[in-house]
Length: 413
Image (cartoon, rainbow, N blue to C red; front, side):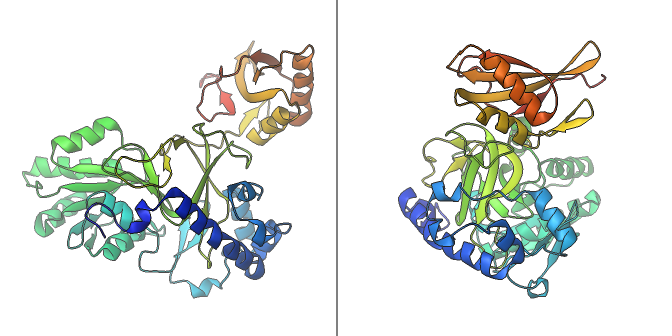
C-alpha cells in the first residue's frame, strides 16, 4: 500500500488494466461453459477465445436476475451457474426473491477492503459494523473487507440502538459501516443519553442513498462519511474516494452501461443499466444485469486512481409497465427503435386521457421522412400489441435519465 492508494493496481494505466482484464476473461468464460450447465445453455453459441475486448463482450447475452431466479427454482440452489458444487462454498446466503448467493473465495471475499481504504480506514482501526448478518451477506461483506485490511470488527448487526450506543461508548471505534440513515439514529440516541461518541471519525455506507444534506450533517458532527455501491451478488462494485467525484469502479470487474431492456452499450455519458462481469472461476457472473441505472463519468479521478468512474446509483432500470392490463417492457420499445434506421432514440410515455391509458412514443430522429410516424405507430402495435401515438422530435430532445418507459399517470388514477 502507498499512503494514498490501496495498491499499485489502482494507478496503472487504463490500457494496462484493460489488457489484463480481457486476457483473463476468456478463461473464465471457458471454465463457465465447461463446468456449469446454466452457463453452457446461456452461452451455447459463444467462443470463449473470441471474448477479448469490450466489443466482443457486448455480443454476449445479458444474464438478468429474473432468469437466474427461474434457473435456481428449477435447479436449486444455484441454478447451474456455479462451477463447483454448492457444498464447496463456505456460506450460502438468501436475498429477497429468494435469490441464493454463495460466499466468494478469499480473505477479502467481496473485495471491499480498497473501498474502506479510500474512505480513510486503516489497519489497526476498530470498525463498528451495523449491517445485517442475518440470511443476506451485507454484514459479512464489510466484516471480511475490514478484517482483510487489518482492522478489528465489532459485529453490531442491525437494531437495538441503545446497545449499539453502549458498545460504541465502550469500544471507541474509529469507523462505522452500515446504511446511511442508521448512523444518524445512533448519534441522535447518544446525544439524547449524553454519551460522547466524538471519537468516531469515519463512515463507509451502502444499501441506500447518502443524501448531500445527511453527509453534511455527519461532517458537522465530526464524521467523514463516504459511500460504496455493492450488491449481494457481486460485492463492492464501485466506491467514493477523497476526490468525491463519482465512484471509482473496483479492480477485477468489467462494468458496462447498457440501454435498459437490451444488452447494447449506450453512448459514453448516457444513463443506462449497469451490467457487471466478474472474473471469479467458482461463481462467475458474466454480463450480469444489476437492474440499477448509472452513467460513466468522463476522465480520471483527481485522486490518482485510473479506473472508470460511474455516477453511482441513479434509480432502477426495470421500467416494465402495465398498460390496459398488458405489460410493456423496455425490450419491446428497443425493438420498435431498431425497426427503422433513422431512429436515434425512443421513449414511451404512458398517460391517462379520458379515463383511459394512452401511450405516446417520442422518437428522436434526424430524418423527418414522410410516413415515418405511421410506420412507427405500426411497429409499436406490432411489438407491444397496443395502439399508441408517435411524436417525432429533434436529436437531443429526450432527457438523459435512462428511462425508456416513463409512467406519467397520476397515482390516484
